[in-house]
Amino acid sequence: MKKIKIINGPNLNMLGKREEDHYGTKTLDEINEMILNEAKDDFIISFFQSNSEGKIIDEIQNSLDCFAIIINPAAYTHTSVGIRDALAIYKGIIIEVHLSKVDEREEFRKINYIRDIVTKTFSGEKEYSYINAIKYLKEIK
Ligand code: DQA
Image (cartoon, rainbow, N blue to C red; front, side):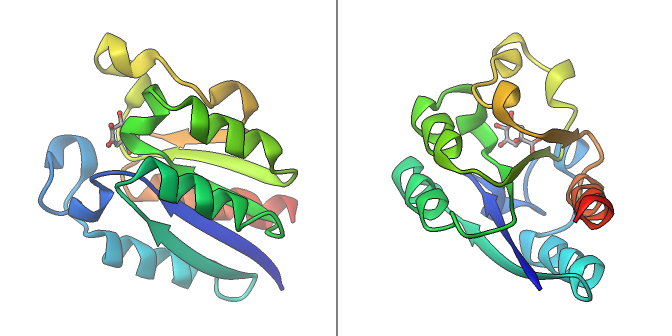
């Protein structure tokens, strides 16, 4: 089975306790459980979350053998050339995910360092942004 790495950036470990209007009520563990249920017959899934830019970059470099990387870089979406450059090394499918409607929020969230190098973006559907990413990968695998 093909491998998918799911990478979540800063403050996503606080889901469930964080701005529910934007991010919903589910914890990251609950979302990961939903992802596993959706993906279990089709993919080997592994999860990574960090609040540190360098650790996320290391994890992307450790994922070069994956069929796809699903990444929610969270705040680093709007700031990180390093994460963009690491993703640019990766030859597989990159799916950008956001729980909130990131393109319709503050101006600074419209700055996006990865949008032009990802295969597809799912945003604004709270935890279902991740589920829709898995459904898309099932269609194209
Ligand atoms: C987010 C949107 C980002 O702007 C924000 O910094 C996050 C989460 C989202 O999932 O909607 O932490 O990536």
